[in-house]
Length: 387
Image 1 (cartoon, one colour):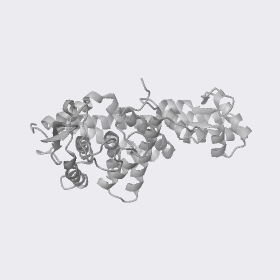
Image 2: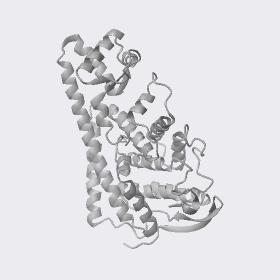
Image 3: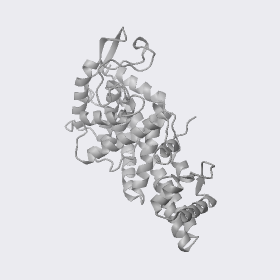
Image 4: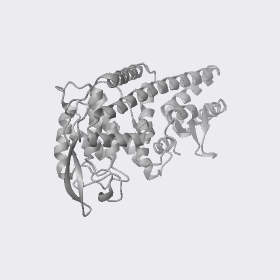
């Protein structure tokens, strides 16, 4: 379908140069998205996969544990897209009171977890998904580390650009800062609109491009934009828990992702973008279901091994195992705190788990040792490894 550019250009000043900034037209697109043919099939597959993910999340025996870990995997992946070098292990170590002094990168990843939790808490309390909440989330995201001096929680008051060392060579120049309030007001109206009859998944896909195009903040736009996908799905009741994150998919298909965003702006080809987005939803939902099953099987298999010990010893081992399920990296003092076992009992139980290949000591020290639930972290960390 031929639409032409999905907005207009305004000439503005940035860094002493005159540049053409792109101002997107309000959503939904005109003419409407053609949800038929192959796109309809992709949409139905994505919706079905999302439904399976929502269903299995309600059946997980350790839903809160899976959510705790999965949110942190997303925080690592989303932050890696922005250039951080932190791993999932780095984040889990940062969260241990016994392991202070984390690098700046990990602080930023930790901010992402806090921003996600803040947004979900506000939505659960009945607060609407609106510009005020988006600014709050941004404020938490940039509260510490790099970007903390770039107007956390406030829409930008100067021009930004993407790609290139200066505005004149930029790959894309978002709207002038004077246009941001109107653009975001229209964006908020689209988030709340229901009379257009758009399915939630299509609305989420359209909103993602629009937010990335407006780029309303000086920093953190990509991370906020990815967070909004989960917030919209939860807020609309499509997912009961925030278990769909597209950061790994976007990371794996980064060049296609950026090409399609630009294609929407230049030609109005929303259908090509939605095909890519919906395929990502399907793949990611199916991957999350598979991961949850593998983790459940791992927990059950390791529990069976432990129960063969029999008697009181098995009871102590199971308590340590449960603690490692909640926090895959722990010290002996952390184990004691979470199990209330005596130090000698906790140490003996942990040594037994190491001998059975369930846990592994990662410091090589005699004191202040840390233990990792190896298979758990290995499964969860797939895709987060740095090259």
